Amino acid sequence: MDLKSEIKKLAREKDAVILAHNYQIDDIQEIADFTGDSLGLSIEASKVKSRLIVFCGVHFMAETAYILSPDKKVLLPEKDAGCPMADMVTAEGLKKMKEKYPGIPVVCYVNSSAEVKAEADICCTSANAINILKSIDSDRVIFVPDMNLGHYVSKFVDKEIILWEGFCPIHRRLTAKEVMGLKEQYPDAVFVCHPECSPDVVDMADHVCSTSGFYTYIKKSDRKRFIIGTEKGVLYRLKLENPDKEFILAYDTFQCKNMKKITLNSLYESLLKEQHQVTIPEEIRIKAYGSIQRMLEVPRNF
Image 1 (cartoon, rainbow, N blue to C red):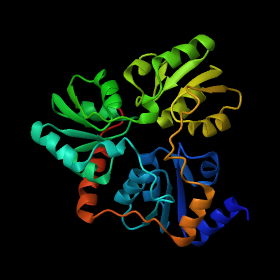
Image 2: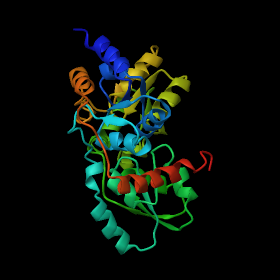
Image 3: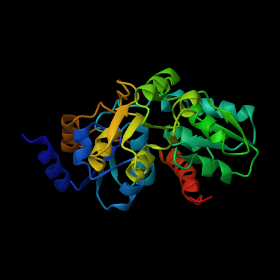
Image 4: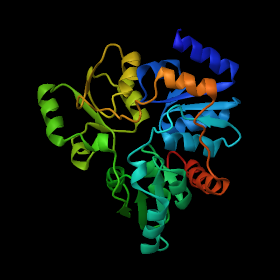
């Protein structure tokens, strides 16, 4: 059986849209209706009329799709595909932090659970975090869960940022020593990294950007060799769009195991049986929706 053809056929029959995050395996990205970052995919899904949303990503992403499209059935092909960083902050933990810093606005990175989003005042992505922080009328802000993204943003805003001590293990794994070695080995290469990397690594970057920002920046660049400081899944599209350019992964195992759990087989099974549905209690969904909606209302050129 040609699984790719069967999945596409089944998706048509079941009125389903297939979303694939940039970190998914190549085969999944190849057959998806939309690829992109987690929030961008959820927004796309909310616009289409499909009955089913099959989110090839991790749990918080499927939750976000449901937050924006509660009238649709949202499936996560691998029910235990989670996010270690998102798991580092809980709603209860955030409530305690809010009690410690009463009245301080909470900015929540979208890489978090629906319960945490519901406790926040506004969400952000790695692409718009600086604008979101600038838009808040307060000299102090609580930022959860990624302390590395929060540290990066702090360099661009005149505010005290109270950081939650969460992080992405695979981005934090990259060291400044490794980057220095690659820069020496490939002196003509441009080092591009995600702000989830550690501050000392970010300081060495020629360009810092969100996952989606990699595609835009590299496509426009006239340089031919790039050191990639984010999850290896981005290489699929980078190579597709830039066949004349060379990409060097910052370290050999720059790979999120959770993002790689979904296979063509598990996608097919999930779609066929409509299994592993993701839902959220309505009270939490409404509060989380408010945090996302307030983010979307902030002008991009703030």
